[in-house]
Length: 116
Image (cartoon, one colour):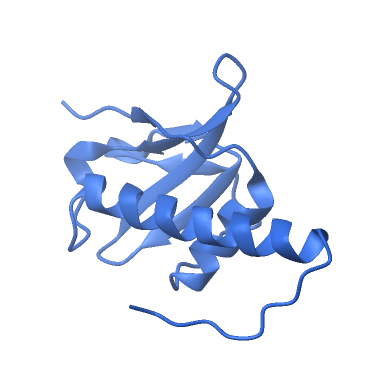
């Protein structure tokens, strides 16, 4: 039997999270604030999106940890990369977006970026 799983993250701000997801090519469902699972059951989330292969995921704010948690039905995870790798990619891009945002807020300009 399938059920929703929540996975802790260190993601604390919505704006860099949404920017990171967009930069990675994921499309946010701005009109949907839920994730569907097995037999059409759904659970509320703050940020919802569909991954390829009909994989539904979302991020929900956790007041206890003051972070976003990933919410998905792991039994229905059909995305080409494992959930742990997905979280790592999102976390890495989130960190990058946070650094870029804070740098600009502090009045610095980015003159050159190199990917290695």
